[in-house]
Length: 125
Image (cartoon, rainbow, N blue to C red; front, side):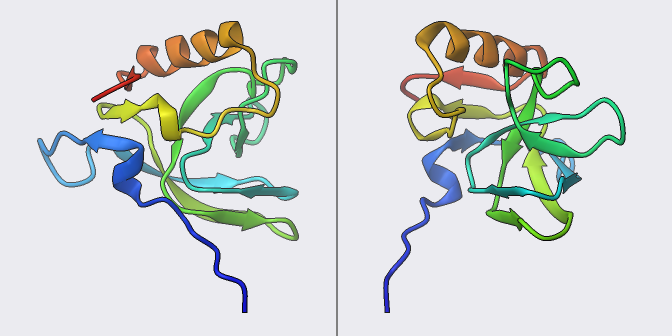
């Protein structure tokens, strides 16, 4: 049996504000064909409102980072519900999952979009 290590939530989210329960979190639908891991930066597709991994090469809404996936979400065969951090926390960039091949400029663009959602991204927290 192979072991599959998943980094704990605290590896990437360093502080959540508890003004009231779940202030920072939203329940979303992850679109079919996505198998996303906890810590993945996600975006909302404009048509239909489902979420996918952020993709700066698209123009369907998925180019705009909207949050960070809290738990793994395997939607390879059907849409699944998942929780994301959508606003307010401080997060560590070192454990976020950006798109494969993302350049430093791409990551800066994604982090700026997260900052617009009041998600504070830092190298060290």
